[in-house]
Length: 414
Image (cartoon, rainbow, N blue to C red; front, top):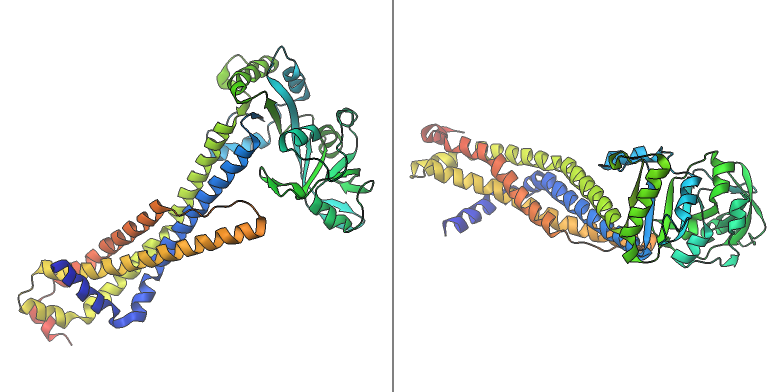
C-alpha cells in the first residue's frame, strides 16, 4: 500500500507541470527509441542476410585472398590481397586435386560507370562466369545470349546487362548488338538479363557482367582475382572439398604452416557466423554511442528534481514537522525520479517499435527485399530496466538533498 501511495503522490506532483515533465523525459525517450530501432534493424538485416546466403544452397564455397580476418577491421586487408591467380584455378580444376568440385568461377569487381551515347549509369560491374550464373542462380538472358568459355579464353569485349541498366541507357530501344563504354573501353552487348530482383546481395537488374579475363586484362590491368566461387557435388562434399582446396593451394603457394595461409575458405555456415558476428558488434557499438542520450536524459531528470526540491522546500519542512523521517523524504523524491524515467522508457519503447515497423515497411516497398520486422524483446526489457536505473541513479542526489533539509529553515523558506 505504501508503494502505491508513493506512486500516486509522485504522479500528482510530477504532472502539475506537464510540459516541463515531458521535456525532461524527452532525452530518455530518444535514447530508448534509438536503441530499439538499432537492435531491430540489426536483427532484420541478419535474417535478410541469412535468407540470401541460404538461397544459394549449401554446396557453394568461396575462396578469399589474404589471411582470414579475425575481426571486422581485418576485412579491409583482404581487398588488397593478390594471392589468388589463374594457376590456382587450373590446379583446383584437376580431378586429382579436388574431385568433388563441379564448377569454378573466378570473380573480379570493376568500379566505375557505364555509358552509351551520352547516357551514363553506375551499375554493379563484375567480371565473372556466365555459366556459374546460369547453373547456380538459374538465370538465363531474357534477350540475347550468354558469353561462353571461348569468349573468356579470348578475352572478348562482350557484356550482359541487367534490365534496369538497359532501361537507363537504351530506354525502349533494343540493346543487343550495341556498344557500351565501361572504364573507357567499348563492349558489345550480347544479352539482357530478366528483372529478377535482389539475389545474394546484388540486384540482377543493376548488374553488368563481362568475362573475368576481359575485366582483368582490359579494365583493371591485374593478374589476380578478388575471390573464387566454387560449387561442389553436394552439401556432404563440403568438408572434404574444403580440405582438398586447402592442401592444393598450400602446395601451390609453398605454404607448410597452416597458420600462415594466404587464403581462406568460406562455407555457408561460417559465412553466416562471420556476418552475424560483425552485425552484432556493430549493433552493440552503435547502441553504446546512442546510449549517451540516456545519460543526457538522466541529467535532465536530476535537474528537474533539484528544481522540484527547491520549489517544495516548505512542503518538505511541513512533512518533517509532522513526523516524516529522512527515509520517507528520500522515498518520495526517489519514486518521482524513477517514475519520470520509467515513463520515458515506456514511451521510448513504443516509439522505437513504431519507427522500426515503419522502416521495415518502407524498406520492403523501396527494395522489394524480404525484410522481416523483428521485435527486439531483449532491447525492450533493457530499455525499461535502464530507464528505471537512470531515474534511480540520477534521482538519488536530489532525494538525499531534500531529506537533509532542516525542517525549521524549510518552513521559513519563501
